Image (cartoon, rainbow, N blue to C red; front, side):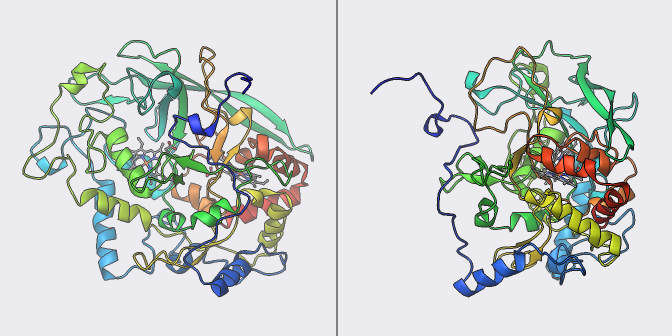
Length: 503
Ligand code: HEC
Ligand code: HEC
């Protein structure tokens, strides 16, 4: 056997994201009969008739879609098909989502355990009215833009993150403990001229950190800013069958359309099989519950039965942080937030309703829908799925939904890459999301984003202030679609935007 030099292969992969070979034969759903499978295939087939809305199109979130007034509370409603018990859990979960945690020791003992290092005291602080976060404006910081740290895993085993600062920059500490530092952000202007002469100014962010309190970052640490995404329809995304997601994957671009789409395989779960990541901007979490447990520990500094870090994101090299009192109380259980806090918060996050579409039959919206399809946007923003049959979750089971996402990772080009310091040693972690790779975000509810919060930002770091800016940042696999958008005349562009606003 001749050695042609060491090559990366999936078998050697020590990383949490596994490269699972693309199989020739697509896996099939096991929850459906052959007849149902054909019915589902018919229902999700892309439409070619843009003269009228499709049946049920307005009910983008299936049976639980909210038809409440599309106002600033438009993303806060429970799925309309919860039973009495479900509504009760939703209400309790909602209170916990808004609850402000306090530092230990406190007089209200069931709420303490905050930090010691943290970014915000409640989930709601970042996921504003259950919608997305806002980027910082001027000198004022914004908790909902979080600076994550990643570290080439080839150099160190473990959960990733900076050796001193951990997984992310915490810009708050409990009394007596200095915050880690503060995000410093400035924007450079980038002018883009569209085909019809209209000029659009884009903001290119430049990230730094001010006032690092615990020494320098490791020279290999990468910065990855992330804005809090909206909480819309998450239980429905969880209910999409893996086979239906893999059906859209084309990692080697065999069909030659310039768009690949890679599933985000995570390290084996309890069953021993790799699990598919769906949540977070890089599809790095498999379930809403896993993401919620991580948020409790890393963003707020509260331990839960699924993540027992009662000192949150403190590392061994932050002894002062580790020495602070935590909020664990023996009589309530071994974690700061005992059962059923995580259950209820996860239930809540899984059952926030998708808002009903507005104006689906308006001529401009239908024209925009056609242009969205003709421009190739639907190659990644896949319109339709039918969720799994699942007797354990009837409110999300077996429904036609229109999330406009494939939940796959795509290379979006250099303009959207996370910052990689020049000093980063060459890493071989090909299976991990690359700097420019992002999960296609679902677009349902996006038309209400700035109704819910006028300062809501678009894209993974909120740099885009308008939907037009968001599209203009598309590059890499989405370059051709972006170029088609640029070449539209003003009326067509307005129609495409009217379609996005109707989502
Ligand atoms: C400091 C701000 C902040 C706080 C507090 C916060 N989050 Fe988040 N949340 C984020 C960011 C940023 C992301 C994206 C993470 C990523 O991509 O790495 C996110 C992602 C999520 C997601 C995935 C959504 C999706 O579409 O993929 C869920 C679910 C979530 N958070 C739930 C919660 C819950 C529950 C809490 C409270 C326990 C919470 N978050 C607290 C900032 C926050
Ligand atoms: C190759 C796959 C791909 C194609 C094609 C594509 N997108 Fe996207 N889209 C993405 C990804 C991935 C992101 C997230 C990028 C980021 O945040 O850095 C995104 C983000 C967006 C956002 C912002 C979403 C949010 O929650 O902030 C909008 C709006 C959008 N796309 C619209 C479009 C339109 C319109 C088209 C067609 C002109 C299009 N996209 C084509 C993959 C794609």
